[in-house]
Length: 108
Image 1 (cartoon, one colour):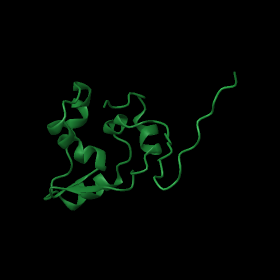
Image 2: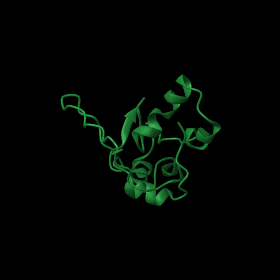
Image 3: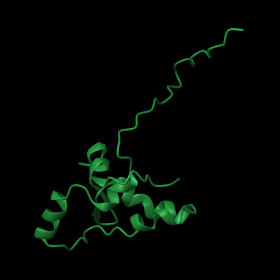
Image 4: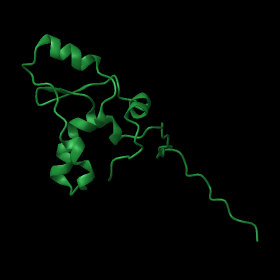
């Protein structure tokens, strides 16, 4: 598992399906769930040092001022957004109740 390296945090934020879904964890409001749970991933798995800049993210403290909280809520893209893809990446989830698609057999 490695962070994306598209180099465009703004585009990553614009493509983010969770950009308006803050995450509450340990009394703090995090920008997004991936940032909130990244330290747990680091604790469980040997993540590459490429994750270190994102592991340094600090959410606002529970005792922050109303002005600090309002400023945080108004933030859009940040450098940490760069860990996610700059383009929407769709994939098809398998549906276990649907029979699998038949494999195409090449003509001989």
